Amino acid sequence: MTFALAVKDWSSSPLEFNAPLLSRMGVPTTHTAGALASIYNENRHHVRSNGDTDQETNVTSIFERQSLAAKLYAAKQSAKQYASVFGSRISQEWRKNLFWQLDELLSEEEWDEDNAILDLESWKSFLTGMFVIRPAKRPGIGITENGNVVASWGNVSEHLDMEFRPGNEARWVLSAIVDAQFERSAESGSVLRLLERLAPYSPERWFGC
Amino acid sequence: MSAEFPARQYRFPPITEAVVEFRFASPISRDEQDQISSKSAKYYPNLSEISNRHFHIEVDKGTAEVTETTTNLRRTNADENEIFLITPQSFNISQLPLYEGWVAFRQRFQRDWEIAKSILGYRKLERLGIRFINRLDFPFEDDLVHPAKYLNVYINHPTQYGVMQSSAIQTRYFVEDLNANMTIQSATVESPLPKHLGILLDIDIGREDDVPQKDDDIFTYFEQVRLFKNQVFEASITDATRERFSSDLRLGS
Amino acid sequence: MAVKKGQDLPETNHVIRHVTSGKLRRDDARNILGVRWDGLQPKAHEGLSVNWLEFHDGAMVDKVKAAFDLMSSKRNFKRGDVLAKMNVGTTRHAAESSGKKIRVVYAPIDGNHGHAEIRNMPSEDEGFLDIIASTIQVDDCISCKPLLELKTTIASGEDPPIDA
Image (cartoon, rainbow over all chains, first blue to last red; front, side, top):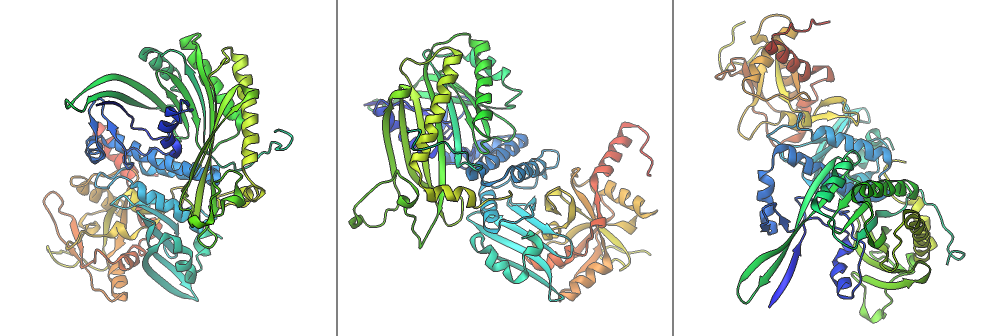
């Protein structure tokens, strides 16, 4: 028994799974160029330049051998590509600003080598969180030591720092003046319930809406 | 079809990827790929090289050998939403969001076609393809999304089956006016929006027969395809979906 | 005033903490708004590493430059990082108002004799660390960029720029 296997490492449209079926029907398709590719987090075969094919468990080891510049570039690329999943729901101004902040945050000149590279799953949680909150005011973006995105609003006395974790989880620290009293809180919970959890602190003070 | 489904402009179209493909009858060389890639670098500064290995595996003997190695050159802009993919057989120009309208997209792929032609000269085209992949996101209502409310392309099934968990449809047509084949695919997908379901509406129109070879004919053909594709899109969705385009969840204005 | 190793620093004195760029609270234009709680997070069971400013002589600006030079032998600074200046007394009182007793002690190490530590800072209490971070005003965040440029200028043998 013989079979031929063509292995690619770039993903294409989610409907590309139909391509083999269409081929058997003798139907050519217009090949997409990779709307949802994620270099190091997708469950893909990766073909190295020397011709060896790695199963997905070895993708991490390839990634670890990349230079810092390559890792940072890959992280930026994946984050920007993922943002395209939201289509035109992210306005030009938001897109431009988020991508600029990403470029600055993940620049080799600024990068702390002790930091883990940006976790794509955290970035996904962050974008989901933004669509839950839909703030009028864009956050400043930072990163924790383990590569999680942090969104910040406010100033020294009244602020909200929100760390986004994989799987739509978040942890936040806030300080606010509520009824003339300083309130501080450090909590965690689901990204999907952020507005309910923040409601007692009148979050419009940070989000502008 | 045009009278029944007039063209509309949407400020926020649900396009997740628009692709134009020029496929050649015979392969282009690696050197030609490299030249096209270099010449387009100022528009697409980021380059990835992707090797494709074809293996012949003799399972009974337990042996394998590489039968073919080809390379795709994938160029992107800084924002990673404009892609120029150069393969030995074709080149594909993709636009990811934000899709800034047909005119801007056409200008881009026409420019890239000129770049390729400046290197290749005349090469016989075997296929011209346009593909628009839309993702429509619908909110759950009591944990359900009713496709019939939003789409005219959906699976109709007996209620005895119960609640559908997922679906995928694929239909194929011959479009006489364009002398082209159209493949419509639609499938449920995870939506990135909270408490929403995504439904892909993928319209792929490709011509393999009597393919235009001259520039004027090629781009006239693309304009015709685009108009037809718009009508197909309008025919596929309901007014309930159209209303959502202006009221949908959005970041920024 | 002489302080021995392991002794508490005077309340009127200051320490500086190296905070990396990613741990700063910024707005969407990347202006610094303050230090995030994780910018002051010590490793588990360790003190928070800082440098004592009054270890050095001169005006505050000279103390900062001297401390930066000492710290540079042990740490890798980037242009986007800051030195967060903290008043010893303010920091201690902020901790006490939250029911915790911290110490700011002189703790010289090889290659950095100006090193100090803030001890008893809980590494997993974000709320407490945020209170301490909130004592650091925006003006207390000293950009590392000019300090790095000054080091480069001196290393290249050029005359350093005159402070305006």
